[in-house]
Image (cartoon, rainbow, N blue to C red; front, side, top):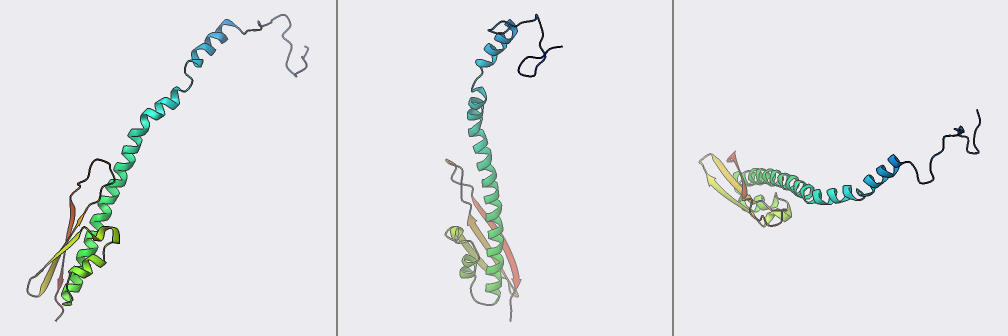
Amino acid sequence: MSYDGRGRRDRGSVRESPRGSESNRGRRRATGGDCGQVALEYLGFLPILLLAALGAVQLGLIAYTAQQAGTAARAGARSASLDQGADGACRNAVSPWLADGTSCTSASLGDEVRVTSSITIPSVIPGIGDFGRASKTATMPVDH
């Protein structure tokens, strides 16, 4: 058994043509036409991925706004139960970027006070501007 200068076994009389076999040339031609296909498919799918990501962020923002509305209602009810007014405590309990869309209403129920806070849900999806309002209610006993 003999070896060529590159450490490979010499095959003797079996020789390939300098341009490669017919099957290799056919394979090169088939894959050569697909250059960049994956990149184009990715670019075509990218808007769908971006919309899905924006949708996930929007759902998180809706949940966060609802949580902030609950916090505002509890803070307002606590403040109203101490006879300090509900509106200021409501707005102070909300994140500053949500405070502009916050409104609180309070109702006296005798020995209790009920405060309802309502916050406008912001939108991150272009073209869709109205997701409504998140409202929560809290009731606390009046401190005599």
